[in-house]
Length: 102
Length: 160
Image 1 (cartoon, chains in turn yellow, purple):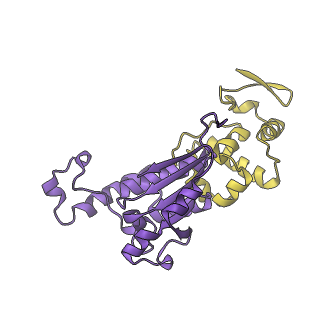
Image 2: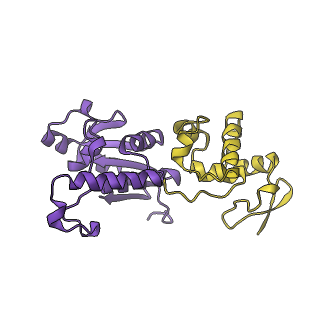
Image 3: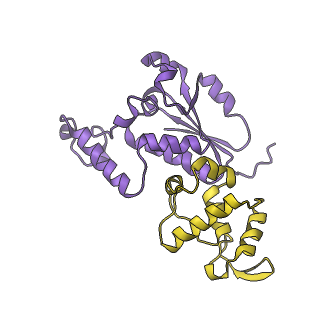
């Protein structure tokens, strides 16, 4: 389905995750963050670009990987994205929701 | 009447067993809750205390006796070394699927904001002290305290 995000028509799935990362840019990220009531700081952007790189390299994401990333520790990750951190962060980053149970 | 629409707001998980498979079940459920934006607390009681006892938590085993799903005949399961063998095999498989060991999992839970409580009665029974436990454990509490902490809308309780 299509959704208007930051004035652009963007393809998303039924949960609101982008289905085509090529449609993502920073303004889309900002609009999605605003929907999640998150004010993006430089630390948020560090994490988002880390997630995007991991996704590009086809590394499955999990909370354990985040903790070992060297970019952010788990505690700060929860502070940056307080509610459902990995789900929220991947949505803002324009990448699919991780399927991991851990 | 409650206006709650069925939304789960908090999981109160009681872990009463010290076998690896049960400990992991509790930890995965607690972590999974936090990852979904649901609060989670774990109450460790009886053998569940082994999962937070500093000297014991790295030496937990799977049950090879009385566990038909292991597909090891009970007579063999009781042989010396069988538990260690089965546990090592399970630990290797878990590492393959990116499952942390018990100590690392406790650190993850703690950093994720999972509150951990130890049961006073079981602590007294096993002669454990608060200092024996993983640092992330908040407090030693009674079952009544635990019920008090479980009050509220959308709180679910799970016994493992």
